[in-house]
Structures are given as structure tokens and as C-alpha cells.
Image (cartoon, rainbow, N blue to C red):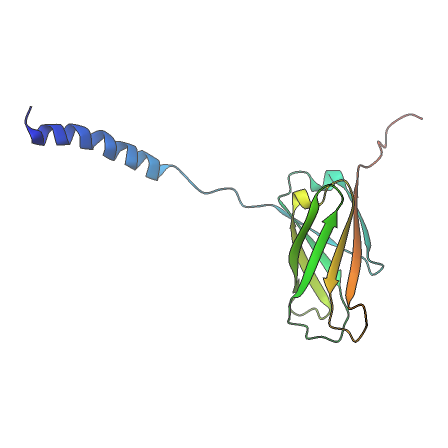
Length: 144
């Protein structure tokens, strides 16, 4: 068999595989987000069922300080079993004193999570703390 024919016989299957690989839809589904606003008292309880099929959780925090409203703030999220992560509290445009923190769903495990956000206050302890409690809701139809 001449070299040209061998090259064509080898090249055709390779090109077919390449075309097949390129035609596969590589788009992943858009990540689903869920937003929760932490009340002014700094404590939020979330039903674990509200976090099903969620990839990311966005927490809205109220941080009234005298710092610039367009600057992000360092934030730390700690949970006994899920560990600790560092994020950034991003200002919400047009809402002075309101910031958002985006977390992977896995970071909000059952139980209490503490969120600390650095502030720009003239105070020895320049941070705000927030508590998020993720719990299983009691069965509402259960007999007692």
C-alpha cells in the first residue's frame, strides 16, 4: 500500500474523532445560587431543605461603618466540621452598608457557622460577627 493511502487511512479516523470531540456540548449548567439576608441582629436560621440543589449561597450582610462603601472587606467563615474559608465581602452597589458574601454550598453544613467581616471602625475590635444556623426542619405532619 502506498504511503499516501496509509496516511489517509490513519488520518480519516483521527479527524472523525476530533470532529466528534469538538461537537460535544461542553457547556455546564449554570450554577444555581440562593440568596439569604442576615437580619440586623446578626443571626440567621436556614432550613437545610432550602439548600438542596444549590451550588452557591449568597449572604447579604448589614455592616454600617464609617468606611468607604465601595471597598470590599475581608471575611472569614468558620464551621466546626466544614472548616474555615476566607472570602471577600463585596459592597452592593446603591446600598450603603450592605455587603454580599458568596459561599460554596458545602461551606454551610448542618449546625452553626460564624462569619467575621473586618470593618473600618475606630474601635479596638474592628470586625462584625454573624451567625448562620443550618438545621433540619421538624416534620410538620408527624404524630407526637
